[in-house]
Length: 175
Image 1 (cartoon, helix red, strand yellow):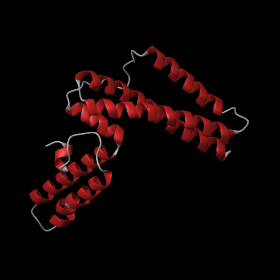
Image 2 (image 1 turned 180 degrees about the vertical axis):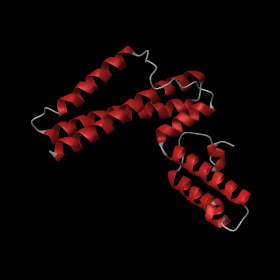
Image 3 (image 1 turned 45 degrees about the vertical axis):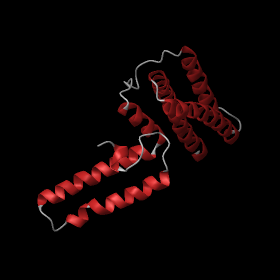
């Protein structure tokens, strides 16, 4: 049983997160290990396994990039490792520019303004790619799934950039 089926959801990228949360709470109440505290050790072990499965499924489906990756894996798309290189040379060049922008924040006269500007750029570009990813996943063809896979890897790069920006902002503003 896949994670979508576990929650009784259609196997698609767009899901109702409020419904997912409600279903999660309902499922967890049914299998929570505390309900089996007086059961046999086998019942307790089974409850722990089911609870863990439900937690893993929920954590995957509630986060858009994890959900996209899971959906692509269900579709049999071969996900390249994070370390494998991109064939998109222009994106690689743009990555370097964005890293330079991040580096320039360290030396900016107005750190708040530099952080804000970098954040706007990262958010805007992330959102454009995210919109493309949604369309590609909805199309669900071999070509669109392959493109979605590439965009997912790019989105993970932007996610990491944002984490790095947050860390940098914290470091610079603590001084």
